[in-house]
Length: 313
View 1 (cartoon, rainbow, N blue to C red):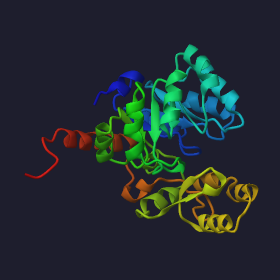
View 2: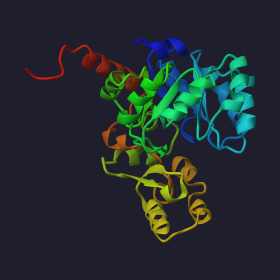
View 3: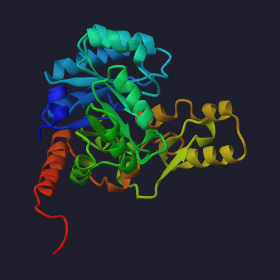
């Protein structure tokens, strides 16, 4: 299944694994890349030493392209951006800000740069500053989100830029891949669906929380702070929501959620931890290997796209 995106990145299938902090580490990244997609290391709140180790561990396990996701709000963003360049990581994706000040350094290192965007204006800005592609991510996704849905955002971004667009948010199967192609995207990025894979080194409680989720089980916290985050509902979310309604300060809310994602991912605290996951959780019912998942998605999309009609006579 070759598209402009697979040619750009040198991958077999147009599927990117999201760079989820504390979830996307070298075991998962290598497995996705070996399966023909683009695996990514989530730099999130990482240190430089940790990231360098992760990059080298991925390279021990695959000869295929892989990426690093840099959350630009990370206090160590400058250091991490430099390590990405020094290690000549094939691809870097970015979120929570603009990577413009790093662009030339990465380009000089031969790195493909793919910012995550939540608006047409930001997509155009990223194209102007030299991005190779953009991920248009709808608010159905887990973690930090924008306001537009994937269905509305993707075709508008496709119409606005001349570089490949990757669809993200609310995608978990071949129907999502086929639909993304219909919207004009050249590939997809998935986060939540890759959490429920055999190679994802997250606590079983976190995986099971996703597998047990229903379609209405996500909530968005943090709208009052200007930093909305989609998570699966639990006791922490209930407390957070009550504090928001009571007018709690940004500092009080930050204190409540400090370290909450790590507690959920590593310790399995899915009651008081932050279980970041997308609305697509209700469609995830089984734990597969990365290879099984990617082949299943590609085969399903291919069947749908080769049908001669989508409607009854």
